[in-house]
Image 1 (cartoon, rainbow, N blue to C red):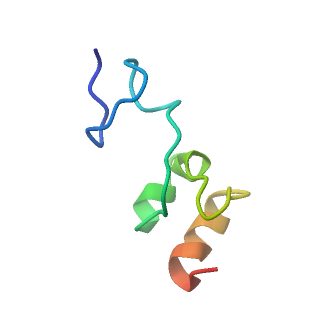
Image 2 (image 1 turned 90 degrees about the vertical axis):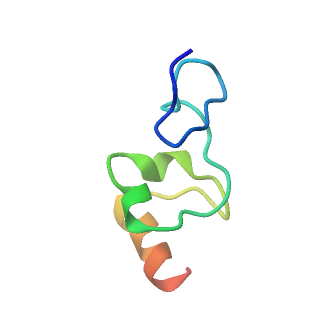
Image 3 (image 1 turned 180 degrees about the vertical axis):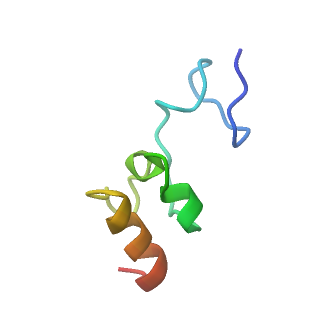
Length: 58
């Protein structure tokens, strides 16, 4: 089993395809397509949308 970078591995093949629940906590989590993994409070349109949420809470 491949270990995920964040220590969470839902499907046994890494965390690339795993859904990220909860809120992004920092801009780094939005980079490198990380923005696609978040679904709470909503999905993000792109990296900038995710970073804007970090900066403004909206």
